[in-house]
Length: 386
Image (cartoon, rainbow, N blue to C red):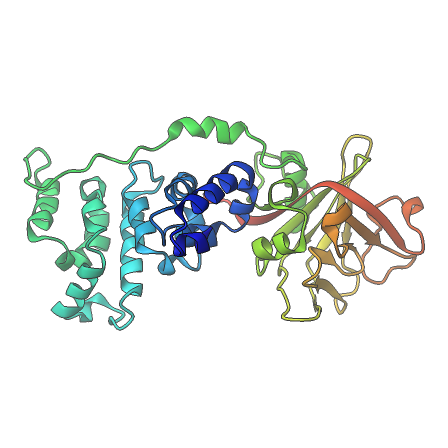
């Protein structure tokens, strides 16, 4: 599609664009950052640009909090900042715009107090298409003073005068154009709160896992669970492949894997605080004292099973570029996981790595227990903000 655009094959590019949006949305989400960047390099892919922006305005952290934010194409960022439905506080938008502009001028001094008039002019030039899109009159006085005032020289003098005047005399008219406040989509909140965060586990399961992470003797309730579970990967959405795992989960820390076993009520999983890191060639492995594997109470499964590390010197976090999440001597996704979604648990009598088998011992043959999964998910956990 992008090549078609380069060679001005507009009709072909439009056909591919429509096909991806209609039939391969999961692939677009899997490669979202790259697709987003590339789509704005061409004026042909308007529908794809809109499809991407409709996602970003609702979940702006996908782009604004990414490592490649400052590499974002100007057309893409301008199109976002200009949206009335961008779900961000205005001062945060300002701060991100300033961050992007400074990144385009790497020779600027670190502290704006040390800038020359030429430095401010360089920043103003880089941001000339953004500055008219900021809702300055929707920013609080404290934030204006702390975040906008240091860069007042990049604003038109009349605009800066009017911004100050608005806080001194709110009812006095100003000559500068006042853009309307951004529309906060409060109507979507009830949908998001009632929608299940997972297709594998529920809130009770999440609270129990949180209790294990904090090594509590008593379990958290669903009301006092201190962790937020942020979905990184869902097999049915992102694919049951090693590539999807590494694209979405590489170097993510504090991650939880949960799997619904095909043909049973079992939910198996594990917690990895240090995360997986994709090796350049062959596999690698690391020690991790605080990881654990588990089986959750569910349906006919009467009790949850927690299995912590017994031997802290064992390399239990297994990094293999050809497979997904793997806990050495615990459970692992097999090579070619996408073919039959097969995994295996490993356990033998007097196991020196983990405390307990997480499946019924009758299901193990020669220390291995094989199974396929209906669904699996990987979450990154964060402490909830107070």
